[in-house]
Length: 441
Ligand code: HAM
Image (tube, rainbow, N blue to C red; front, side, top):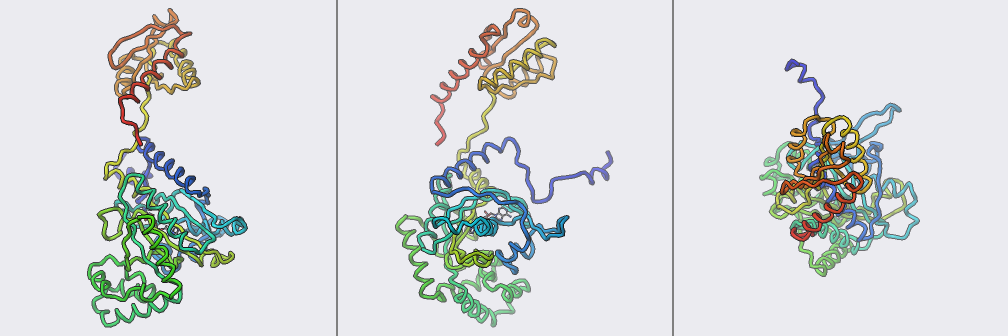
């Protein structure tokens, strides 16, 4: 094939990743743990479609945000509908809350969600165009104890998965507080405009709060002396924030008051927080984030429903767990290989393979291969404990050879006894392994 035609071959899209077989056990481990956490904290699972009306995200995440402005995978479908691959889950959960009448259920309605999301971000380590999140939402209660419970859940999950998270927290008040604050911020930057890039000037005009979490060093320096939103909170918002912090103190959850934390989605009010990995002091690769969004459900046509939630990025979490050498269970290697020689033996072996599976033993084989040597090489490579060998002689005798791959000892076992014998030996070797291995916590 010419180089030119190779260029045209379909390839993985930029920013997308395959999750390969060798990584599946880590993913399964994490997903199972998170599901167990959700159940133990009383959150019920909800799944929503990958595709939603574009207007859902424009109304909720907000027109002027990076996600809506630059990052959505949107297209017009065959029915001429403007649709978008979901860039986040909260909006979809709020939509489902309204459409399925959750408002009539006892409050708070505690929902848990897990799935892939799509953002046309600039790909780099920890930043993909398809990535996974798990997401916890608590809808129906305005009390600060809800915010604290969510922070407790986010913090504990990350911690019990083996990392040392840092909770960054701020309050962005209510809409009127933010309006007053935005004016003060614009006022502060006015005499300093010549020190700002065009991009930051644009932000200051369209979404001044986003200037606070700008990554550029010169802006970060200016932001240090800028007015802080906590000084603009109404008495109510301030009380709410203090109560959240008191709960965190009571729970012994360490947090950093971060006046620059504003989050990149428009639906938040009052408490906002992020979970940063230890050692990250910019939040560029935050593990997760969330906050209160009391106006979202109503803005999507539902009844006024105070709510709060958070989401954690699974790829980032796994990346940090690997970096920190957190023990993650390795895939279970198959324990028995079936090797055969000759056509009749091949037939018998496919049958034995199925009989073993029915008896709860998952074996591996290379039944399409002819040479015994080749098959034994494969058995060695995948490091099975036993190989069952069925050659021409065994076929005539109605027996198999069971070879212990650790010491090379071979036993002859009759066809009738082979399944229970294999079961027995494998159980024994598992018991032995469990005695010598430190169990995974
Ligand atoms: P978010 O801060 O946009 O919040 O995303 C939460 C987490 O998703 C991030 O901290 C990060 O771990 C992960 N994440 C975001 N973008 C990417 C990406 N391009 N590649 C890899 N990981 C990524 C939300 O999505 C809100 N819906 C959270 C929320 C729930 N607020 C209230 N309820």
